[in-house]
Length: 54
Ligand SMILES: [Zn+2]
Image (cartoon, rainbow, N blue to C red):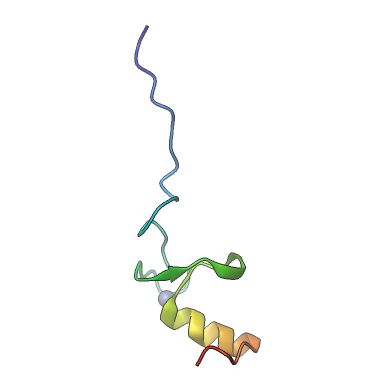
């Protein structure tokens, strides 16, 4: 029997996500099915009307 490694997606875990907007991996937020770093999230959230994030 050979060794079989189950394929684990690397999309799970800290630092695996990239910001869809600027490509940064710094503090990527995965809320609302968005993958955005904090800065981009703030800008987009503001645009979308989430004015709480200020
Ligand atoms: Zn970004």
